Length: 338
Image 1: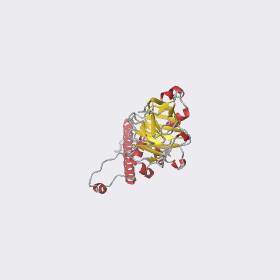
Image 2: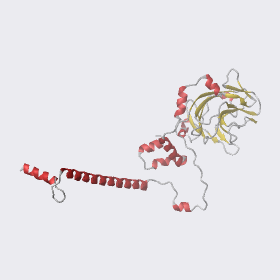
Image 3: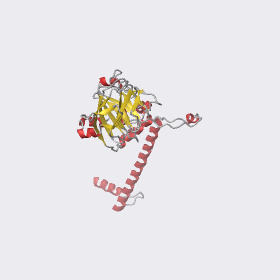
Image 4: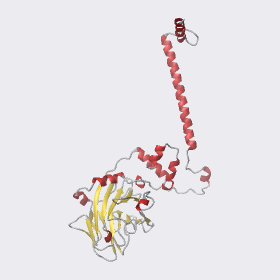
C-alpha cells in the first residue's frame, strides 16, 4: 500500500493543470515559473508596506512650514534672512583644539614665525629684542595701542596662547583678530579692537565682545549661548593665560582657558584674512603670544554635514524641537550631541 501511495504521489507531482503527465524539463520550468510568481508577489507586497510606512511617517511627523492660510496673510513678501551659522563648537569643545593643546608647544622658530609683527604696530609699542614673542607698551597717557601678528589666516584651524598678567590690563584690555586695514591707535582709553567692521575683539576686563562697534552693540562673553556657561560663573575672571581658537574653515572664533572652554565668540568669518591682535592701555604692560599650532582644512564627513545642515535649519531658538522629530533615538542623540 505504501508503495502504491508513493507512486500515486509521484505521478501527481508530474502532472500539469490538465492532468497530463509532465516531463522532467517541463516540471522544472513549471517550478521556476511558480517561484518567479511568488517572488514578484513578495516584492509587490514589500513595496506596498514601504509606501504605507512612509505615508504613516509623513502623517505623524511635525512640520515647521507655514500653512497656506498663514502664507496668504502676508501682505508683502518679506526679505529672506539667512539663518545664523551653527557650529559644533557651540555644543562642545572642538576636538582639534584638544589635539593641538595636547601636542604641546611647537619649535621656537615656528612660534617666532607667528609672533608679533614689529613692523605692524602702534608707535607706542615695541617688540622686545630679547624675547620676540613679547611686546612692551610705553607709558603714554590717554592712548590705546595695538599690534598685529606676522601672519594672517584665511583657512585652516589655528590656536595661539596669549599671556597677559592680570595687574597689567588697566581699564581696556582686548584680544582678538583683525584684517590688515584695522586701526592700530586711538586717542583716549577705548576698546579699539572690535570698534570697526575690520576687527573682532573680546575685552577681557569688562567681559564684552564687539564687532563693528560703532554700529552694533557689544555683548557679554562668556554667555548662556554656551551650554556650559553655568560652569563658568558670573564672577569669572580671565586668567593670565588665554587660548584663542580660530577656525577659518567653519568661520568662527572661540576662547578657552586651561580649565574651561568658553564657547563661540565670533561668527561668519569665512572669506577673510585675519591676524591675531591685541590692544592695550596700561603703561609698561608686556603681552606674550605663543602660536600653538594649526591644522590644514579637511573634508567634513557626510554625516557631520547632514547634522550641521539640520541644526542650521532649526536655528538656535528651535534646537529643542529636534527631540520631537519622529526619528530613531540614535539619530536624535547624534543631532543633539548626546
